[in-house]
Length: 181
Ligand SMILES: [Zn+2]
Image 1 (cartoon, rainbow, N blue to C red):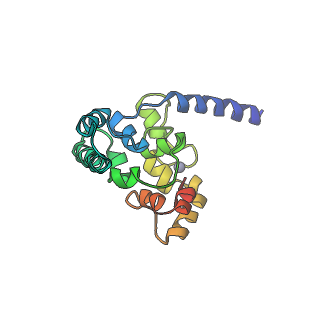
Image 2: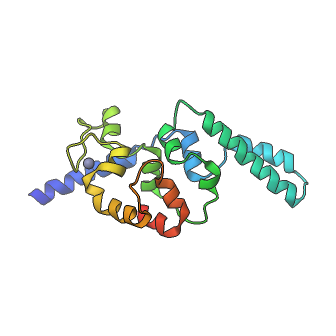
Image 3: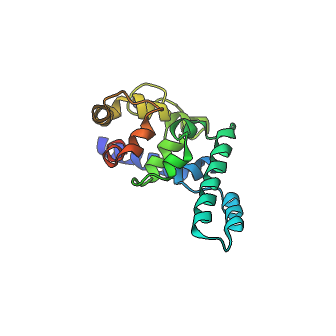
């Protein structure tokens, strides 16, 4: 009976989580490492028929513009910006795939009780694993459910995880990425 209930509950939770995918476009682009299409089109116009050197310089210029736009973004994506302040460092990393779960973490939009609660999808914003209010910060930095995983990463990098060092840890090395995700 207990197992059946658990199974049913898991089904509901899974459905809610995959149904909910609202991420602001600006944040989604940064997370996936894709410059806004508007900037890409302008770059193409500037580089049409030009040599490779020019193309590379203009590509860097696109990233600089993108970075300025990202810094000027104030209405949305603040959590993502704390985690990924620099689009170039993030986009030019040599390793690491961003899957569905990592996207949730990086966007702060996902299967967090506080978030689902805000949109009236569930009755309480309390974490399923402990009794704290659940959001991306809670899940990633505080929830007891993930203490083991967190300790592995902290031991590896020799410091306490924070929103400031988490993506650097992932970018710096492949091991760091695999430990974190
Ligand atoms: Zn928790």
